[in-house]
Image 1: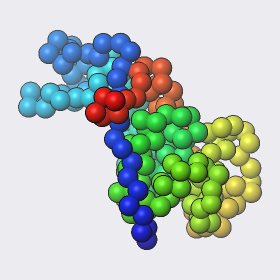
Image 2 (image 1 turned 120 degrees about the vertical axis):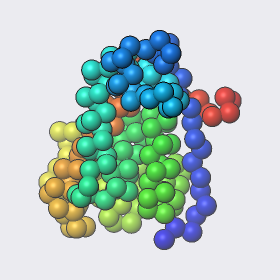
Image 3 (image 1 turned 135 degrees about the vertical axis):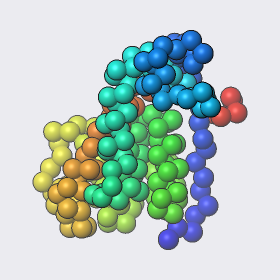
Image 4 (image 1 turned 90 degrees about the vertical axis):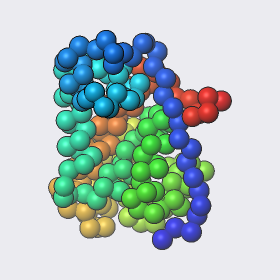
Length: 192
């Protein structure tokens, strides 16, 4: 396992538009945000997406099905797929969230340190390299994913279903990263 003590700083996200105010939200918005009287602390991102509650609910269901489904691809590898997509898309907020989650699930801060210090070019152990290369190509130009990249994943034990899970985790972050970029910006938690 990892001997590195590399840490990824948490970031804050600030929207460009005023988020929905929980105190004045419609019942549909509250239901979309799943706000109960005892739970009114909802992130600015969620409150921003709640301007369109129907879309937000659809997005949340899809996200949960992709990232938290039982079985299939290991949760850590789903997080790695999200991290790689976020790195390609330069969404530092999502990259920091998924880097921390990947380390938490895998205890592999060395992989995250390599990505943060040297980028996606390497060097990684073979299975990690196969995942990074696949998700990077998928995020940069999906049509360029080749059979050799799929075979590299298969050679490292991923089933067809697990590869589909990896495709989904990278793809949803192609979408989520663009939402983050267009709806707001990242800042250090301490505001500096």
